[in-house]
Image 1 (tube, rainbow, N blue to C red):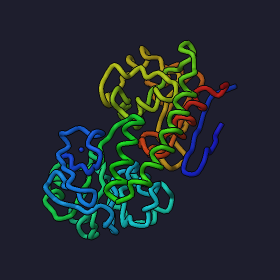
Image 2: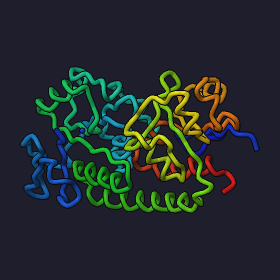
Image 3: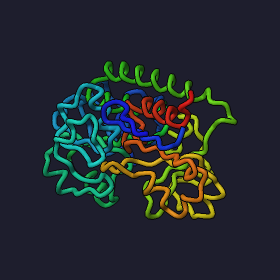
Image 4: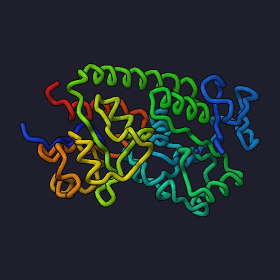
Length: 313
């Protein structure tokens, strides 16, 4: 069965029957090691001793799908002049200049766009490019990754402060957190004995699976699933023997943007063919940024994944 759920989202259920240059106005929310100092409501000193007046930027470069979505949710999307390759929502951002993969950035390309503010996920790279960027006069705000609702709140509050939109930020954050909690509460009602083992793979070539500390692991848990790969940290290769031992009930993957991966492609893989998921062709495919971005739309991803895992309710 193939279904489309909302704008920019797709689910297919196949089964029979970041130096952290952090801007923030509320010291209590972020760790003191972030290296910034608030002088007044009108200015903030960044980690690199730069004073920036919030709200003045009109040529913003966003690096990270969650960062881009938050800027739009704050109503400042028109200030964005370019995005990274992973930023595809809302759909009109695909019409803006694209600077490529956020971990393989070209400093010349970014500087050539003449941004007056860069909002970036803390994992941008390569490291040498980041060092050069930090030496430039362009203010950079590194947005910390945190795969929790509190993390989403920090992202929104930080970005809102950098844009001089604190009031809007509080409103957006309240709405997003309420929706997140409602979705997580719904999934938490799944009894332990009914919870399915779900393994997320980035692709089929190396079968690199998501372990603990990854956004995929978090989304699986919030949606009521169990991740048998959570005994390792980060992404690790999963051998055929390991997969047989883990016995996943469902395989979770990101859309390739071309209609795949399909059940035939996934379960045609020898290592995956021997899993319980293969017996029932249990495959869930979600848009990557939607599923693991941990931004304004994450509550929807939790609900959609939970519904796909437990269609019977």
